[in-house]
Image (cartoon, rainbow, N blue to C red; front, side, top):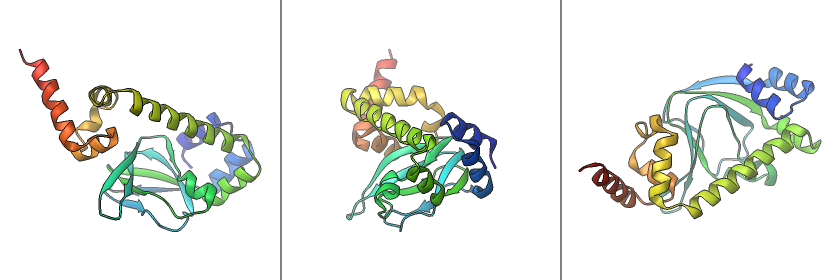
Length: 192
């Protein structure tokens, strides 16, 4: 099993027993870019995934065919539909690779056991997710689209070259047209 995953789980206060369970059942998969890992509406997933290498995106699909990027996922991140896990409902979003990706899959049954026993690892996973969601919500509500784009470029300079404007704009919560205007404004500011 991945030592990166082990280290990640240790940070979440995984017990020796939990680490041994993960070592026993985890499976590594290499996946090419633009591969759908699971579709929105799929039955409850059998595995949770740890993103060891690469970049993925989670997407909401509407009935009229539009897509909204819920999140980009970076290396060393767990890819879990908490809604599906906790409420036992079909997956509410689609997961797709953007780059060559290595995932380590862990059976949902392990997470269900951790949840039932209220283990530290599960509670810490939930804590991290809640903090992330609240920070993202605050960030989207309190910053201008231009500020969000500038921050995106500073945080993820390599990612901008791998994504199209459509993906970036929907991640930032703006339209592609708005992103185009922001890019033009920033370019005009740089030119004398």
